[in-house]
Amino acid sequence: MIFETHAHYDDEKFDEDRAELLSSMQENGIGRIINVSANLESLENTRKLMEAYPFIYGAFGLHPDEVGDLNEDVMARMRELCRMEKAVAVGEIGLDYYWDKENHEKQEYWFRRQIALAREEKLPMIIHSREAAADTLRVMKEEKSEEIGGVIHCFSYSVEMAEEYLKMGFYLGIGGVLTFKNAKKLKEVAAIAPLSQIVLETDCPYMAPEPNRGRRNSSLNLPYVAEALAQIKGITAEEVIAVTEENAKRLLFRA
View (cartoon, rainbow, N blue to C red):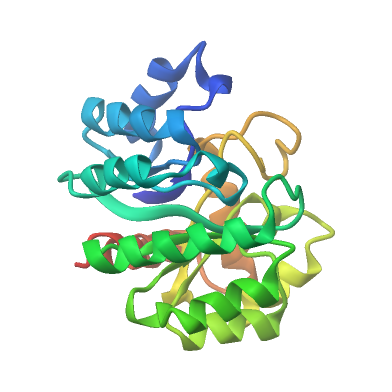
């Protein structure tokens, strides 16, 4: 069964058919889903989803574009959520210089605080990094993040940067972009990364793969990603699905 390691089913784009869509996952080969928090509202909505669906687990953290809402009370609530039985990660956390919605110093401060939360709660991290390659790696090395572990979500940097994270023991999250014709850099990364350090993700409702690029994404599109990765690795899609499922279990369930 496919293990979906990064979804946002609390997003409003799923409001009209969320229950119907989620009820179809198991019969379509999607075994487990991690719903990943990004903003204040999604913290509680993720909790509700993981309580409502046996196959949905939660990651709790605030996206770098949302850290203006972080304070000690929110940190305390996130700690409570991280202690729930089906909480499996702290995320998504990191740095984002693309939108520049929050100043870089504030982003870095709360990134470090959320790394500390992951360390204290003994949970892996789901790292978001966009247009912030050097600073993300610097902060993670300074915080000794290799002692905590996690996944670099929607990996978009160079082979050299991928090798740095792989040496630190991190997993690379790979999704729909791999299927794009112009995704040369990510295809090169997928070729050199050990399959044992790759997990599958969608970031849905965003980043739908070919042939559904531009439409609302969902975990049901993950077979396209598995097939693209299989072609690069010279193996079957079934093998990709089996190995990445075990990778996700090892990372998120520490099994």
